[in-house]
Amino acid sequence: MKIKFTLLSMSCVLMSFSQSDSCITVKADADVFVLNRPGYEDTNYGNYFDLLSNAWTYSGDISIARSLIHFDYTIPAGATIDSAKLSFYTHVSPHGNGDHSGNNASYIQRVTDPWEENTATWNNKPTTTTTNQVTLAQSTSPTQNYTDIDVTDIFQDIYDSGNNYGIMLRLQTEAVYSRLVFASKEEANTALHPELTICYTLTSAAIEEEESALNIYPNPSNGNIFIEGDNLEKVTFYNSLGQKVLEQTLYDSKNEIHLSDQIGILHVVIEDKQGNIKTVKHIVN
Image (tube, rainbow, N blue to C red; front, side):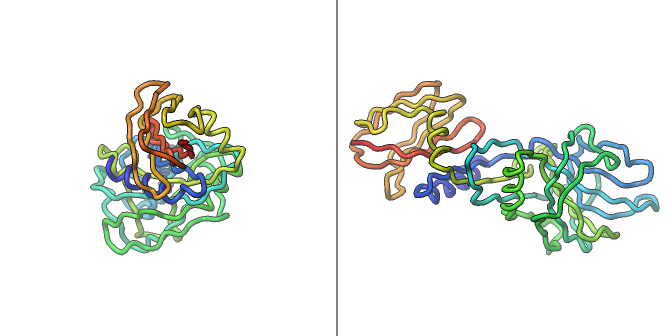
């Protein structure tokens, strides 16, 4: 999974040099399905390994399931979201919910009320909005992964609202027998957890604020620079052609970097321990 993340993050970075963009990739930090079944409407399923978009019968009772998913991330003020891509992965359900089946075309909707993973139920589920909802087509195989779903408008709306309550996954037509089943964040294989990648562009003011938080100095430099910040993991330098010229692990809150035989504009890509990516420009005289 580390290799996959690195390739994905680097592709975002390489495309963003001319725009001072940043990309972040995060896994779900909270998810739960809620169940409309007689006698189970107040039951919480926050510790289950499955996310369901489901209409089925159990012991003769019709059961409707919807899922809530939340991603914890930070985007600086004054940013525009260029893209948001969401990925869900199938797995072998430990609870016997099976594979995708039936007329399971679904919606992804923005949640407009707060909820908690360990207390959410059908009877107290949050409200959602159909504005900019995203359609998932009916599955073409029982174990289909749904990757790189374009949810840009939803996450721009989340950003603009100032309230990140996450998203809901639900069937378009909640009629038996129809089901999508994905791995939740409780799945042992973390590579299968719901994943979100957001790339955004900063305004000039936001870029200055972002760079000041990192405190890269001096800029311009003679090739000897310092990088200060919290929870930093590594730094990579690229020249104006996008070629890597140096990669270095960052161990301390203050790191000294020595660049040799490099003149001109360099693109500095900094990754923190949470996997967040920041890019800045640096001039070597």
